[in-house]
Amino acid sequence: MIKLGVNIDHVATIRQAREGRFPDPVLAAVAAERGGADGITAHLREDRRHVQERDIRLLLQMVQTKVNLEMSTAQEMLDLACELRPADCCLVPEKRKELTTEGGLNVIDHQERIQAAVRQLSRADIRVSLFVDPDLEQIQAAAEVKTPIVELHTGRYAAARNGQQLKKEWDKLWQAAALAQELGLIVHAGHGLDFHNVQEIAAIPGIQELNIGHAIVARALFDGMENAVREMKRLMREAALSGG
Ligand code: PXP
Image: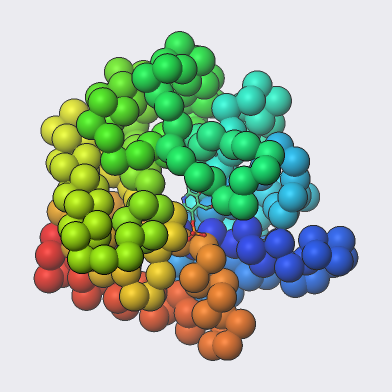
């Protein structure tokens, strides 16, 4: 059954607004697991704007499911991941000025460097995922660098504002998921998913995991983390059963 990785970055964003001690993303992770999260995702950015190294170290001790460490391909980050050894690592492009991860990795142009990163992490028994746009050539390149997983960037789908755009972006995701599976890759997806658009994505055949942060943390402000996660999982399961 389709799995939900809950991204707790934005709990850390609120904490960092005052550079204080609360709210603690580690406690958010524990609550997310009580609500049914299958994993906890956290993006340790090079600029440390929200999640801190301390959070990852504590998450690795507290999380009962699995930790998915999202990070750039900078050598400093790869070395840190090999020291910390989370179960999963999702490699993303990072720009200092972006509000959030804007696009997928350009695996085609940086094949050698990304292949070296996949190799280094795999040797440390970390399952690697490459965050890529739903572009068939990028999927092909991802398979060539021997990543076991691709996470399809759903941001454009989430930002689509009319039926035609939605259909175009959904078709791209569907085709990318199909090709990835043909090439033997495990398929995850995420970015910009919320309580209204998640079902169409969860219904794409073969997608095994969704990583969702902002919408769940936002809903948690009103309903609590456990309820927010429970509702997201209910929607995902319902869609996967009807579509997948
Ligand atoms: N997956 C990846 C690779 C991401 O970079 C992000 C954002 O940090 C997410 C999923 C979650 O996106 P959102 O917070 O929009 O749900």
